[in-house]
Image 1 (cartoon, rainbow, N blue to C red):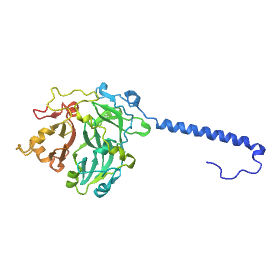
Image 2 (cartoon, rainbow, N blue to C red):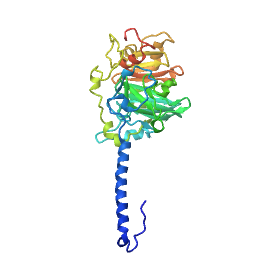
Image 3 (cartoon, one colour):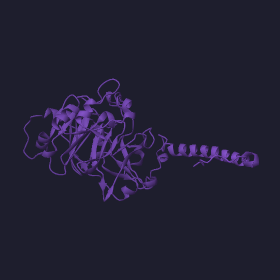
Image 4 (spheres, rainbow, N blue to C red):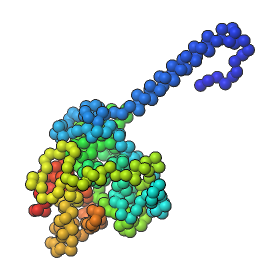
Length: 360
């Protein structure tokens, strides 16, 4: 901090100019040093190509190491949200971009209801964040979306007495999001798979840690708010408004081409690889329904108590969208619901999933 007192008369004549010069040089040197420190701290971690450049411990690694790849984006290249602001439906209706309303009736949202509290997370926002660390109904949750798999999963964030804050690692496994648990100084951070629901590399993997999965809906904004009139909505970040208005994955979903390695893939594939699938069950036993099958079975008779019967009661598929409304109250306690592309669910859960006979 500089001294606010004026220099005394004769200071410079008595040699004070030497002191002043030294102070000036030191000040300039400190400014350049501080600038370099800021640059160093702001330098991205991870070069987008080499997995080792991200600094994560890969020992132990509980998945095939060759299927962990860099996404082209640095660690935290997408900013995960922590304790974000939310809007009421009226505030969401009033919000606009330069061109139109921020949220329109047909926009897809992730719907989550916990202990009677409902919140909607617009996918047009989650494309640019992928992870939201939030608290809903008094429960710490992570609401996650991975555009490469069109996969939606919500988790409890409290694991063995520790509340995790999850970030976007910049790495993928089976073309799916790998999150990381933020630790002080970045030491001891582990990688967590969105669709395996567990730590796959690092200290938490060594401890066998996993995440509890919650039921979610993927609905249009109009359908979700109609069923949940008191819902809140993830509030827009004004600095991101222009990005929220664009979707960089439109062309990706125009074909079945995959950009990153996935193993195994269904062969032969009964459905296009990016067909939406809704899976119910957990933690080690799932039933997966490709959307065409669910839509085709709407209103069909099913044996009471069977999985088909449960799906008919709890899941409502709507086209176009595609979206699925989940009546969580119709599900047995502890039942999870996950939304993902066919290829991604098959690759990560082929051994613990029952499929309809024509689905693989």
